[in-house]
Length: 266
Image (cartoon, rainbow, N blue to C red; front, side):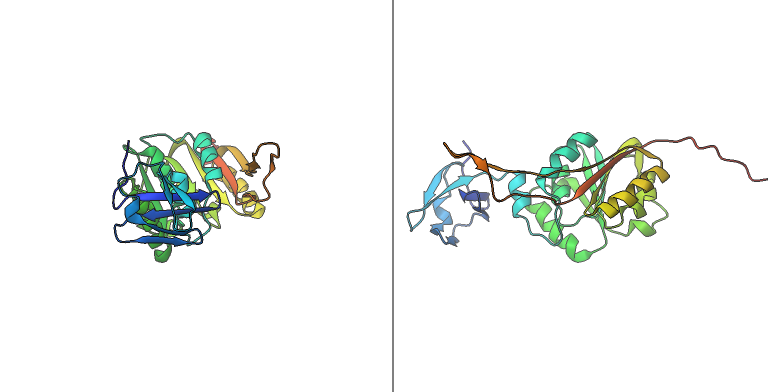
């Protein structure tokens, strides 16, 4: 079984609302309302082991999943939540070996997820215009161990005439005005390649749907995904009072060729 060592990332799990993602160091201590735990006490333990605090509370030492990394990562912008990840991956057909262009890196949550699927042969090329956001995203991507499969560019594709990439399998747009980069995305995508856009409001969704048609995309689908948790307990199972409601709308479409007839100028 895998043993915890110095430098490992470990999820200290007390309950669903109290859990901490920590990098283990021999000299550090973990302080919280449930007490104190020395990091050194975790070293040599198997993942899944339990440690007792000085207040006689306990935490489980869990190996972090991608979900843990995303939910605990530093946010410089609103993130795309895991509840939307699965549908994006299934609807777009994300798989190992693909090349993906992402416009709007944000905090790097979706970037990290996509890289975790396309590796080791695939790659994610992500673009943003805000250096401070990119710095945060770079740290988050590195912490999740996905840096090798992500290339970051500080570049405004809205103003680019020559595209930096071509023959991309898929595209992701996370901008306030996604319709502005659809012509550029079209140039970079393979025929039949899918594009997904993150839209916080229905006004954006409506404008984008029109732009999809104008730029020769089809199989257009707009969705919203609500996650409702269930408190499952013996004899008193019910819906949770807490949950993640609306976070974003998703718009997904595929590049095609309408074969529009063009009249020659006389």
